Image 1 (spheres, rainbow, N blue to C red):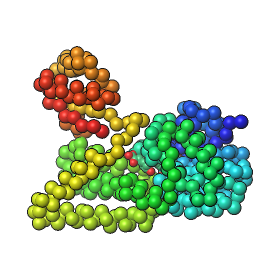
Image 2 (image 1 turned 90 degrees about the vertical axis):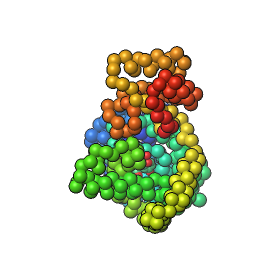
Image 3 (image 1 turned 120 degrees about the horizontal axis):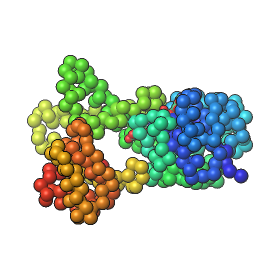
Image 4 (image 1 turned 30 degrees about the vertical axis):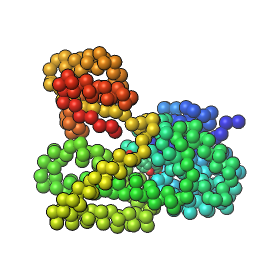
Length: 368
Ligand SMILES: NC(=O)C1=CN([C@@H]2O[C@H](COP(=O)(O)OP(=O)(O)OC[C@H]3O[C@@H](n4cnc5c(N)ncnc54)[C@H](O)[C@@H]3O)[C@@H](O)[C@H]2O)C=CC1
Ligand SMILES: O=C(O)C(=O)Cc1ccc(O)cc1
């Protein structure tokens, strides 16, 4: 008998999990959301078999409940679930970006015969809603589960297997406090920094619009996540309050250290700061293949004359280089160059860079 699964919140994350469940498992998926628009799109895209804006109807007689709402709404929904009749041994999980507060809050579900296992898929986007959902959003990403020490191993196994099938993510088990410290540093703090920088430059730009006009690759790539959903991030920051206060204190020390070095004209300290950062960044583990797979990219300046793109592709095909994508950039705001070439394989990328340089092109190369 296939599992009946309620996905509460058919936005980016709930929608992506629901799409994966329908593509890769035989589960019957019931979608719940307050937005009729997201529900309708989820049904049209085949992410859900049934759709409702009624929570009681959504969770009636289901084997698994996946709560994919903003963190504040996850807590409210847990409260509401305590007064609804749920199927015995139903597994309830969430996808919230913080874990300690949610896991503590979910203890109240233990009064019923249900099993709560906190969860957090470690991939996503600054975009929101079902329109941005994708069944491979989490492929090869980590997906953290934070079961209590007394949670049934069978339930953890059942949920892990299902989520692995649905998302193609790698499931890992972690203590919620440890999760919040790590994720606070590598996700929550960077979102604050990105948004703060965008707001600061926005203030300057109000006086002088050259600030936005000149904003190029570095500013744009560093601040992409500054475009994330305000309600979602309000909830995350308030939920991971203690860790974030410590992390922000450490961040202020880092920034003050650089401020002092610049003030004192201490070139050695500045150089050491960037040398360490360059070394550490190179040591970040490779992201594996997936929707967010690493790709090899290069950009080249090409004159705006007919036949130039054909010339580039001819050079590459002579060298048997496989290009996975070719894109003409309309402006230079992303990176310096007008033709962007993408390769899946490192050897194609290396050969392309070498032969295009040999052919006299200015080639800018990096790996994403
Ligand atoms: N966006 C991301 O990259 C990631 C987000 N998360 C977590 O996933 C959760 C969901 O985030 P997204 O899917 O990105 O958000 P989203 O905004 O794309 O989707 C949330 C959905 O919940 C619905 N909703 C909001 N409040 C509701 C309420 N009170 N009752 C009923 N429906 C309600 C909205 O209509 C929307 O369809 C959040 O807790 C977030 O922290 C986890 C990993 C990555
Ligand atoms: O867009 C990005 O790069 C993200 O960082 C997405 C993201 C947002 C919140 C999470 O809890 C996990 C991942």
